[in-house]
Length: 84
Picture 1 (cartoon, rainbow, N blue to C red):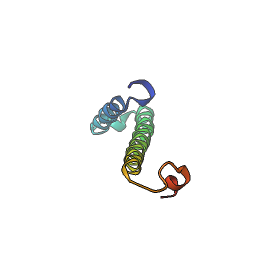
Picture 2: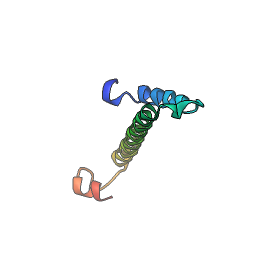
Picture 3: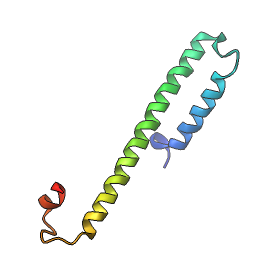
């Protein structure tokens, strides 16, 4: 998957910016430093959100799989299954 959801590219960019920020002359150009700092903040939020949503999807998928495996008198009753 690429584009908007290319998490690996975003993580690579985060690493690249962090390397730049560790250079002794990073703050010599305040405008560029602020621009990179803002980009870093945005990228970290995007990656964090993606990771959170990815975890929720995996967790919910596991719950659905468990529900499907569970024998129940009310099997097929969507209201019953969701309320569990």
